[in-house]
Image 1 (tube, rainbow, N blue to C red):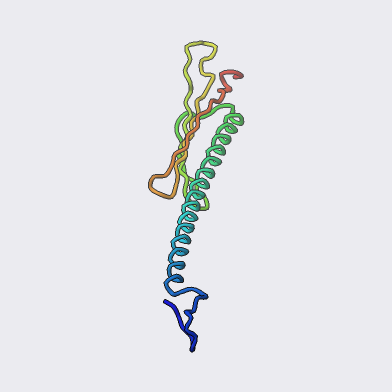
Image 2 (cartoon, rainbow, N blue to C red):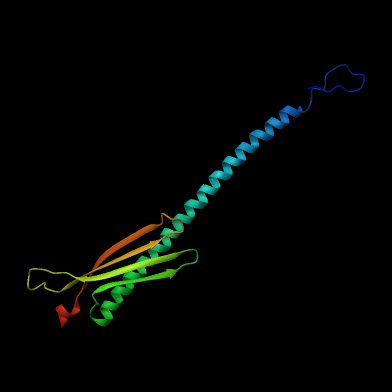
Amino acid sequence: MTLRTGNNSKPFSEGFTLVEALLTMVILSIGIMGILGAYRTSLNALEVVRDNTQALNFLKEKLAEIEKKAVEKQNLTQGVSRGSENTRDSELVWESGVQLLEFDDSQLKNCLNEVHVNVFGGKNASGFRLAAVTYVENYDAFYG
């Protein structure tokens, strides 16, 4: 579409037509929507990483707490413990277990405890599970 002004018989050739402007708006809108979609995806990924990092730190704290109890009490109580911890954004459920390892060697009998800790969490239904296993000396067997 061209615009003629006054008595001038030349078409108005400067500027943009309405169709060109609308086409530009559509192309820019599609590009902005793509950028916003990528931004939202990156935010979701950051939330997952944050939740996993919180759970991993919580798992390390639980292991350290169990090892500290082993040193202070000079022995660990056998069995399974469960609990939960509320974080800023979600709830973490944990389970820990202590089991005395059995060896055939009489010198190693009752000297090690196997400690496992599981942490479950996540906002969505799929969630996640982190697990760790460590071994702690049974102080009664060595020093008792």
